[in-house]
Image (tube, rainbow, N blue to C red):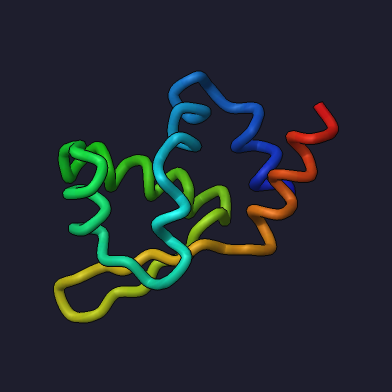
Length: 86
C-alpha cells in the first residue's frame, strides 16, 4: 500500500501515467503491443511501465527477448479505494 500511496502523491508526470491504458493489462500483454496501441516511443512506455511496476500496480515477466506485463489487481483495488477517499 505504501508504494501505491507514494505513487499517488507523485508528480504530475506520474499522475499522467495512470492514463496509460492499464485495462489492456488484464492478461499478460507484451510491452511491444502496448507501445503500438498507445503510440508512444519504446523509451517512454518503458519509463511509464517501470514507474507502474515500482508502485506495484503491474508485474512484469521476461520471456526470452520479450517483456510481458500484467495488472496487480490487489494494488489497483487499493489505489481505487484511496482515490475514492480523496
